[in-house]
Length: 436
Image (cartoon, rainbow, N blue to C red; front, side):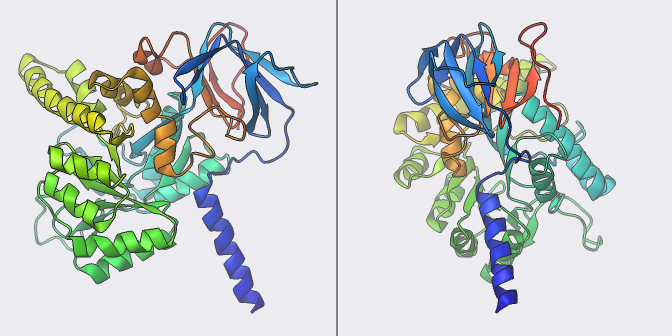
């Protein structure tokens, strides 16, 4: 019985740690105070002038104007800057650093060791954090197995710099319907980007295995060019996740794939690029989140190499914008997720916020998609996403007005995570970053 209780307590602690991202700095610190010209309250969309943010032991203890500075507190004055909550990316792949060539995904799988993939993930995590994204939901390690769990835990322990992570490990897809494609049938046990299954029993086993290895959520592929996993295969995955207090994200591009995923009870639809009105209405009816991931197309259009590519991307982007605009009009809960998977794009996550605004979301709604609403999707709204007492002291600062110009979020000048300064470029002589 003693052994059983010890194991139970260990599992309980591990589960609690997964639900509430920890900070590596657990020792008490002296209070810190952050001052700035204004603070954006993402709940109300209103600026608080001359805010005083008091931070004690990683979390915010008070926010307001004219608050007294605690005795012995260190004061960080950000001058004329605007302070916002640390941003959240709802769809990342920190373990994916594909070469920028057509066969880049396959090269990632067959030429890189798991150790190298993990080290690349650490570099990607650092770039993401420095861009102002202090929390991410990582939706698949893309063939790096459980290296995302290791990266998450290394960040929590302060071994490497990176955002708070919720990870989905391997993802689950139907046999024959995910990368790499076009391999010779003579190859025995080739590496795959996801865990491939057929049938409800294999689906349930994969879900249990991934949860057992530390997944904070599960990722499934409801379609891949066409609907793939059946409702009967997805349901046991959702059941196992929900029993464990975890959520399920569904890659679903087609309307039929979306309907199948919703019938299985998933918590979010990833992409949804071909969703018709009926599918979007069903997403709204069931209270499911949509993570459109259109920033990549916005960025690709900006960097189009020639006129032919520009025209193709512009046509695609116009279609995606219409879908996002309709989803917003219907009241669908939209979350920002950039879907970065290459060295070139990690750290450019704010392109998704810009893309959502250009698709028709008011600036404050685009910012909420990367803050308070994203925190709700992650189930971390009591910890991150707003600057309120009790939340982690995760905050960023920009020089301008993000409501007048959301591209300010692409020029983050100050980053703090859990009360520790990660980046500060606001003024000469300002506080240097706190080293882990």
